[in-house]
Amino acid sequence: MKKIKIHKGRKYSICSCGLSNILPLCDNAHRKYNEDNKTNYKSVKIIAEDTVMIDVNSSKWKA
Ligand code: FES
Image 1 (cartoon, rainbow, N blue to C red):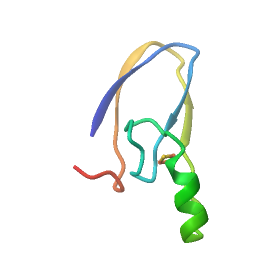
Image 2 (image 1 turned 180 degrees about the horizontal axis):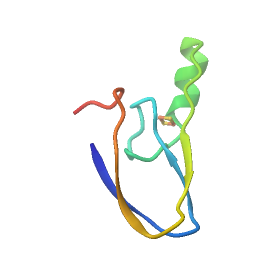
Image 3 (image 1 turned 120 degrees about the vertical axis):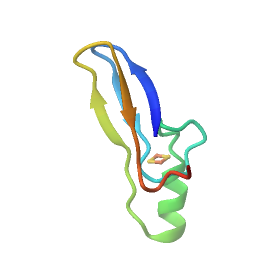
Image 4 (image 1 turned 180 degrees about the vertical axis):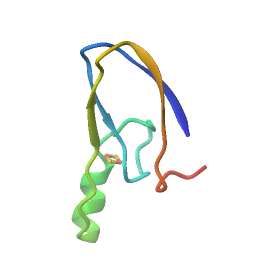
């Protein structure tokens, strides 16, 4: 599980594939993986309604 601070009105892309070097955020590493493996990973987009700390997690992330 990763804890991040999100800021009101800003858009965030959360990694769902586990390949990002900047977890929990997406760095677009999924694009090459999708091309090479015929998969369809995409980041999860969120827009913060308030400035808050959130916990995010994915079963694809290594502990
Ligand atoms: S790098 Fe994992 S979803 Fe983009």
